[in-house]
Image (tube, rainbow, N blue to C red; front, side):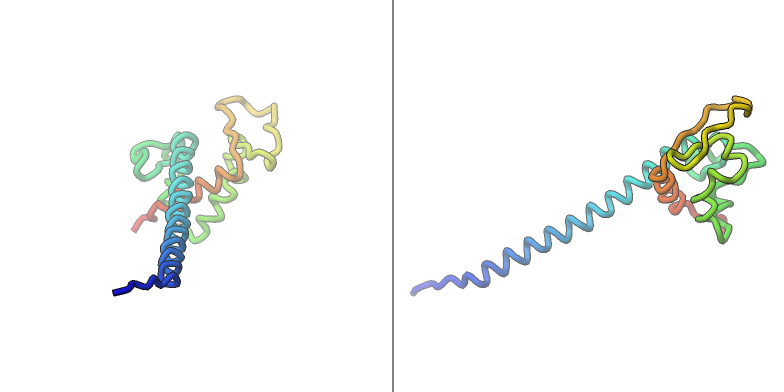
Length: 137
């Protein structure tokens, strides 16, 4: 009995496997990048924001009493916009500099804390983390 090899089936099989691997990799790496952004955002929030704001899961009993918690701000309809431009809202202009955006800190301001220097990419990372916070019910 003679066997014939159908090369088209073999080629189709390997083409299918190759495409599957490519698309699976794209999906996995896409999720990984998003997870990395959330983790970087969580680190930045813990490092810079938790001294004044209560951050769910990071410092539930910390912060300054008059400062809104991140979960309370998520309750607001315009929460995303507030986080995108937080560095322009008081008291942040006295504390935070965004590279390439903010003016240099006025030397006449009292030096009551270290200036926080951030990039727009870091603000995107913070937004990625804040998106994972649930607003209060």
